[in-house]
Image (cartoon, rainbow, N blue to C red; front, side, top):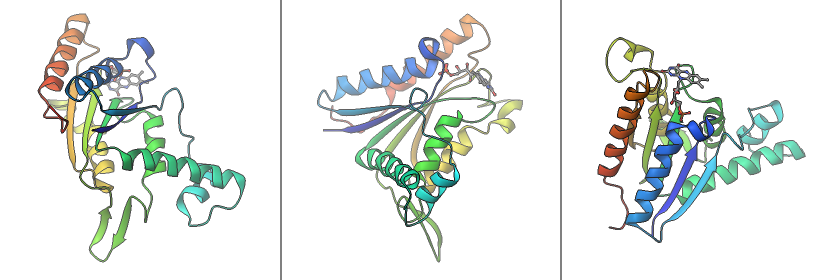
Length: 206
Ligand SMILES: Cc1cc2nc3c(=O)[nH]c(=O)nc-3n(C[C@H](O)[C@H](O)[C@H](O)COP(=O)(O)O)c2cc1C
């Protein structure tokens, strides 16, 4: 049985391209593995808080003592447990202002934890989450995978770095680009991403 964690981060509601595509991915996973355990976390509807002084103390220091620190630590523990339990992680990631939605960044702020999901050694940082497959479904208004805007794509390289830092190095990016170039371009981008998703060798029971 597969364990799948799906993160949604679009604030776009019913018009969201990434939500359409993550729904497709879930359908495909269920088709391949009807017994799959799928946990969905909606970071737009239920955002992890930005790190406050209490949150920082709870998440980043060994001892959480005040109620606010303990609440932050508990949330971090819960988010990391979801991640650890999953063998496949699907992330719906719209491009907002050339990077990530702040809700998705806040999620990373809670799951990148020294001594828990990564550690520093004499050889440098080491990611501690191993053997997981990640599928990132990106939607962008413009075109960044080729052409002059490649240099201002602060979404995909950043996501690759964040994931790799905690050991998640098997990452496939599925992109729906040129969403803002009119209805035809939008439909073509969605169709292209759907075709890519259906071809993915998801590590799930056939
Ligand atoms: C707040 C906001 C910021 C955006 N910033 C960018 C951007 O920097 N570059 C870009 O190409 N598209 C940008 N877009 C367009 C979105 O990436 C595009 O609409 C995408 O489909 C959003 O994903 P979603 O449909 O899943 O919500 C932005 C959209 C919003 C709402």
